[in-house]
Amino acid sequence: MIAPASGFEREAFEAGLALIRRRYRAEHDPGLFERQRYLAGSDARRRAELQAALADPGIRAVFCARGGYGATRLLGQLAAGALGGPPKLLVGFSDITALHLWLQAHGRISIHGPVLTQLPRLGPAACARLFELLESPHPAAPLRGDATYVGGTAEGPLLGGNLSVVTRLLGTPFMPALDGAVLLLEDQGERPYRLDRMWTHLRLAGVFERVRGIALGSFTHCEEPEASYSSAEVLRELAQSVGLPCAAGFPVGHGEANEPVPLGARVRLEADSARLSFLEPAASAEG
Image (cartoon, rainbow, N blue to C red; front, side, top):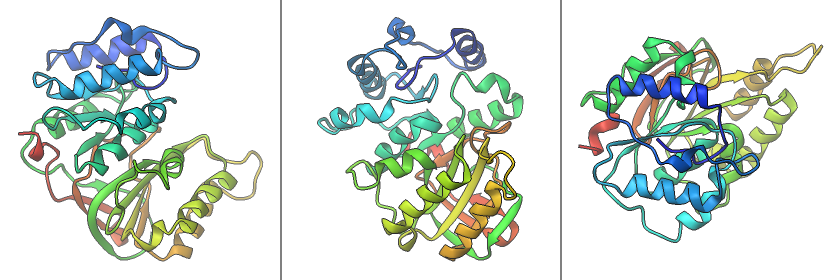
């Protein structure tokens, strides 16, 4: 258990930890509870904790306590050293997207899924799917969205995560090659014009000329008060302007459901039926 980003409420953390301990032997460093302003301790503490967890051959998976902000601050120093230790699955979302992208840039699979402080709110089904991803030699069950924005089919590695974080890593050496990928995007608290601005940033950076399809998760609390339009309408128009196969409403992100999915694994997006199928297991590289 690590805290590479923001500080967190200990009660929520303990509740999530209890769920993990029902199945696995869990451990964490006492420094995990440190606070430095809005961060879970200093950059040096959080970076050392992450590197130790990834390098330890006795650790099979790494769970993040919370997102928030702070993971991007670690990337510059992480680049100075090789990704040590055998491959293992890192679990988290939101700000943890920065670490996912860094891992995918090194050819690793990781799990976009609940952080420990979110896990207790999601119910037993989310835990069951997470445990299956961590353990099963078979691909995960498909996910269903609820809307088709642009029809068509796309196949490739699933990359992305939180839209805000993805845009922040464009032009840095921590962004994996997006050529041929299916791009997963979700966010929270970003009004429609901000979603438009970030989407336009992706377009101007040539992202949509490189990826093959787009899977949109939840965009919670993204509405403009008293507006005559919705964030979904804005995202639909933006997707249609790109023209790539795009389905929306997948239960991934900050909403009431956050189904874990393997980033870096090959998927097939069938946008006409809003279906995302997984073509390889998350645990295949982890042994």
